[in-house]
Image (cartoon, rainbow, N blue to C red; front, side, top):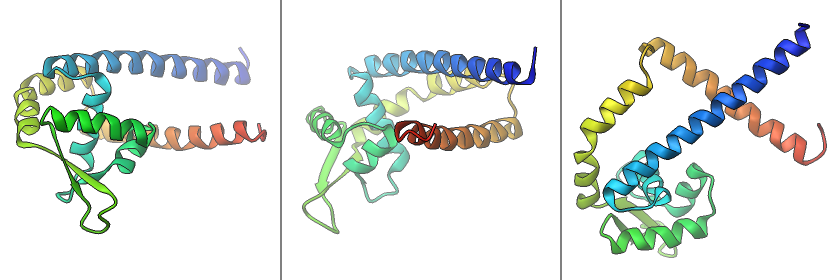
Length: 160
């Protein structure tokens, strides 16, 4: 097998591994959501807000960017999450035209109830990886994510 063929095979294997991982993670997110009586997108929105909130709340645009979804969908779903008392939505201190969202005590309590299962899941997911290996893997994946964005842009504008 030539060098080009080896690289092509490695890229195909990588892509199919990512597809499999993505599929399994979707199933995991769906299960967490169902436990809380939510949809998978609603669960992901809560997780994004939990990740992004530095104590001042999070904008819908920040959540949309994190999840790579349309801001209007975030607005629609966060209004539902507010009705379910999982989110608090308040006007931004900087600009009242915008809303800042944060998890409610109810959301934090419900997520906390899942913590033992989530820790066990994470342990299973990362079995065989020490901290250094995981750090290395995350750095490489971040690099591949950046490169894939560039490749996608080049393909879209006809440079590839």
